[in-house]
Length: 209
Image: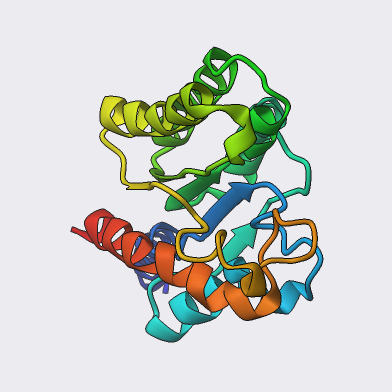
């Protein structure tokens, strides 16, 4: 009887460990109002649409949206370590920098913050997808070009995929933007998702290889 019990325990421990190892890891979205569904129902936001698509495909168990309206790269950096520890994501989508730019901050600051966030995420075992933004023309071509270069340089430095502009095909269409001219409407969210989804799927496929 004792030998049978010992055999049962030996078989049970690996099974439990295997179950823990295979527990699905979520996707973590760390962004600002563009990802927090500002001004529209949360369920219609692109992150929630991403959650639905990924769950339907069986790619991941869940998408955790840690986005906050008004968030800056400094705020994201202050939160990312606890989010990584809590959720243990397989992929982190970083959609930050717009609020830094709208405040006219020197681009060295958001670049350094994003660099540290990317490194922290990668050190945790997660892949990273960087999502860029654009700012109004009144900020001048030098600042606008510098912002674009910031995202491209970071993506190249860390060899991570980049969505150059989250609102590509949306931002210049007044019918798809809220009255503030900064945030897309609910009707525009599937178009926003279309800018992100193929890159997300490719990144997740790379993690499974």
